[in-house]
Image (cartoon, rainbow, N blue to C red):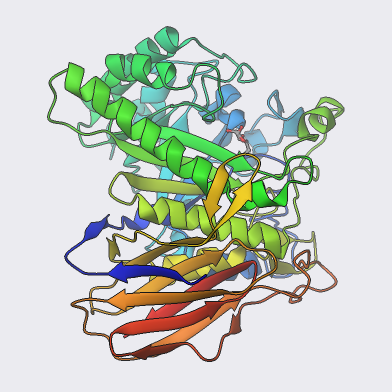
Length: 500
Ligand code: AHR
């Protein structure tokens, strides 16, 4: 009943692209308003950004930040979001039945990224729901062209002398979903995505473009959608997107804990589909994966709540409060992404603040870390380098959804300085899991740290009243001797074991 694997630097998956630690800010609920932006807040700076939130965003270690949606982008008029704030129109946001004030817009988003620091990168979505090629290239010209054209000079007149330099662009959002404003068939979307990509590349051939894949592996059109879209866009785009959210169904926690089994199969199926299209086109090019929405989300019921709304501004929506169990599943999803770092080169945790988020805020009050904050921050901090190929030999447990499943889910990343970090989850809810890792050809002599997130109460959470109820703790007794790492993973735990 011991789980085992071997680490050997000769066997690797690939280099981690820092963009895998991306996140997502949508005009949805309180992600923007009273989340990152609250001019009246005691910590707000002169641009209305909450400093307490900025500090936590930096600590979280996010890189690319996707914006402005999500479903919101399919009705987005970028022109509404620029220029003098007092002139910006209020609009209906059909996606979330709310009113958008446009007090926070494109320039404020770029300002927010700059305040985070150089690790933050824009990832801008264009509207291919209610709009098309013309508006996409107008936005690109406004954002990226230096000067001397009507739109570039308009940006300058609005106070942004320097171009925004947005390299990474999403061609719409979840266009396969019937809920999407301006939803399209794969053929329709493939065509508009191809023509938008072609035009955007005419402005700047170096942009990196993400075509919409499926909103989930369970979509009826899954795989056929990707194949059709890529047939039209293969030479014009760099990435195809994947979205996945997980929650327990009918109280089935064992399957919920194995959610990464679905995530890994989703990734592998999309890779197979991309490579199939590439093979048919006799192309040497590989399409990479942008897993630009992923998380635990207690989605059931959201639709009904949104349907009841009467166009409020920044209501409390999708404010899931995450437990220790949720954080362990979340950590396992991070492990799934790292295990596929060769092809998943962009990923965005959906979302950043208040809306299914690792950071929560109270209007006028504090900001705090949810349980899911910790796995993300640790993975972003220690998960940079080369992913080693981890093939586990693990005791198993039975799940309703996925059958017999490994209790251990793990990956390992070797940093440039030769140190290695193991990220591991014990999916077992009651028993500790002994772990032996054989270290071949690695110059490692000591365990720097074994940190775990687990709790006697797996339902424990951080809240406004108890913002630090759950934090990672140090685990004693983990050793490295004669080329073997020996550890015990607590029941239902996320673990970070650092060796140097
Ligand atoms: O992240 C919340 C929503 O989930 C996004 O707006 C949409 O793209 C997805 O369905």
